[in-house]
Image (cartoon, rainbow, N blue to C red; front, top):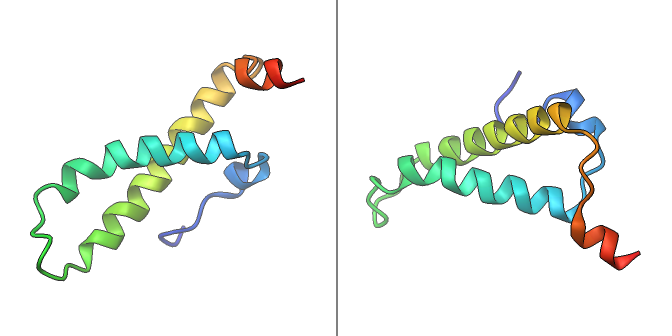
Length: 81
């Protein structure tokens, strides 16, 4: 699979704002270890790779969580209804 593309089974699920936030949060944590060591004043082509990889890893982790616990009700969504 080319870098930056999310697998088809991950694209099939509805992408809600909560889901995007969860992926962003996890990807930030996953990428931080690699990005912290980089000099912010120097251009670095690997930065985009690390971020893309972290997003893919976070989406994969979220998909595994969804497959293991598919019926957990989001407390915020339940309160809004």
